[in-house]
Length: 224
Image (cartoon, rainbow, N blue to C red):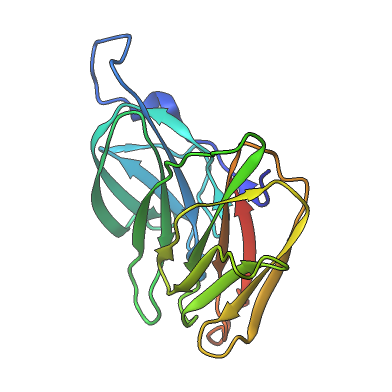
C-alpha cells in the first residue's frame, strides 16, 4: 500500500565504482521529503545525483538497492543548485533504510533522519506499523488504532522522531493522532486493505499553524 507520490531513484548511479559485477552484499534505501516549506530538491549521493525527477514535498522515492558503506548525501535546491543539507550515513549490508528530509522552524537549511527499517513479523498475515512525526511545530504526539488503545503505535513522539514498528492484524482500521499532553485529536486516517506481511509508516507533516504565505497545513501519508 502506498499513498502519495513516488519518484524514481537511479539505482545504477548508486554504485561506488567497483568493477565487481556481483556485489558481495547489498542494502536498500528510500527517501521521503517532509519539508513543509516546499523546496524542490536534488539528491546527490557520493557526488552523483540519484533522483531522476525533482524531489518535492510529500514525495516518496520507494526503495533502491545499493552497495553498503559510507554514503555522503547532499540535498540541493533545484532552482539554484545550492546545498541545503550535507550529511554522511553508514549503511550496513542486508538492511533497509529510510531518509526523512525536513526543516526546523525559522531555519534556512534542511535536516535529515536515517531510520533502520528492520523488523520481524511473528504471525503470518500481520502488518508492522510505525509513526514518523515530521511536523515542525507539533508537540509530543500519541498514535493509536481506534479500539486498540491499550496497544499504541507510538507514545510521546516529538518532531523528527520515528517510532519502532508495532505488529497488528491486517484489517480495516482508523488511526488517531492525539496530543500527548491532553488527548486533543490532531488528525485521523482510515487504514484500509492493508496487505499482510508489509511494513507501513504513517507520516505526519506540515504545520499546525502555517507561516504567512505557506499553505502546507497538517497532513498524513502512509508509505511502505
